[in-house]
Image 1 (tube, helix red, strand yellow):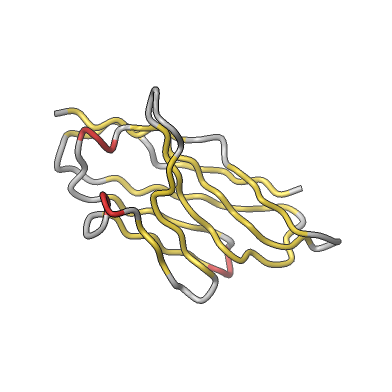
Image 2: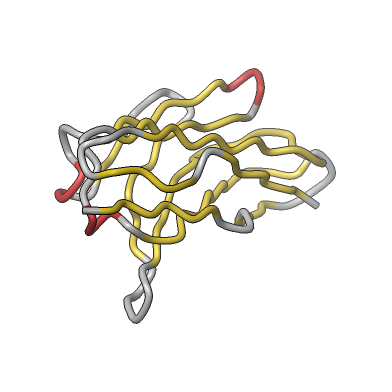
Length: 120
């Protein structure tokens, strides 16, 4: 199995910054893509940002220019630097990883979620 452990959420005022981290561990042969999703109360989970092994990134329009995703392939860790936070960024943020097991087969794993709350 593959475990994802997130950290870095919290309460911040509008305009502030937070950095989320997510470390993957377990029977990992390789991780292809890692990403961050978020889900606000009463809303569907949405992709915030993703990054491939080669460093190709993708962002939802609402965070472009404010959030930056990066990863450390050697440590199977992905980061999300969030700047200029807005109240509408308030949500539970979930880490996601897709890859190949060390033994056999592919996996898609999720973290437990970390809460980000932005006050106005």
